[in-house]
Length: 124
Length: 124
DNA sequence: TCTTTCGTACTAATTTATTAGTATGAGACC
DNA sequence: GGTCTCATACTAATAAATTAGTACGAAAGA
Image 1: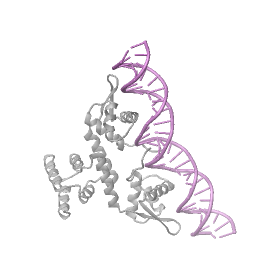
Image 2 (image 1 turned 90 degrees about the horizontal axis):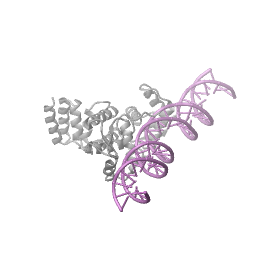
Image 3 (image 1 turned 180 degrees about the vertical axis):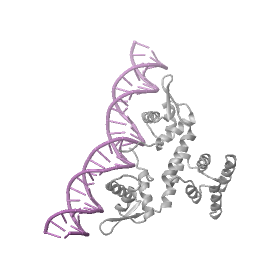
Image 4 (image 1 turned 135 degrees about the horizontal axis):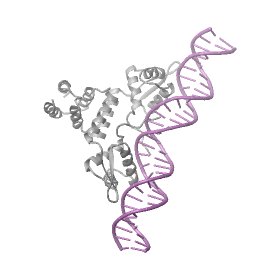
């Protein structure tokens, strides 16, 4: 048996990002936002949003004609969970080797580092 | 249709980590290392390793009785790809918001940061 | 009112990811 | 040589992930 993913899958995340941005949406809202990224059927978006509701990532409320969906959990919380999951899976939970990779790959600049240090002082 | 994952899946990664560590292995070697982590069948490990060979993560060579497998790509290269993929998917490619999360979540210490700065100077 | 539009519920199909059983053959051991 | 060990090849099963079609009813518009 294959266990259901605890974190968001690729396309679930794609949809959640749109909903966190718009805050309160109908299926159509998300469908239209998705169309700007790629070809997709309306019912596909609907199915995904229903799954996200089952997984407790979305709350549904009856509105006028269509349901209104809103995030059930704040974006930062969910993203933190994904980072934690990734770190555990790939680096056995430690952040440092991740950073080494980022530096080696030139994905972290000196400027990023400064900013981070500043943030660190504010957040002791 | 569902496209095949470009990067390593959770359990493929689990197996690859063992093989990168041992460098050159038989299915049995990996099976025994896996058993220390969790219950799994010999043939399951074999199937996964065959998939990893198809995906070009492993090279197979006939040895004595059993095949010998070795990594086809260095660990650092593959891990970098996974980091890149994660960053793209979750943070639209920028590393900074990831770091902010790490700091907020107390997963980065001042000491880590120092070390990183030092690394940065060595790697300009 | 009739027709078109829109939203949902239900159904379903495909491929991946994961797990593992069975058959078969080669080599080791007695 | 006969038996046991084990490695592989093949088959298969199941649930998740992703995609989307169809039917049906409500509402909107003509």
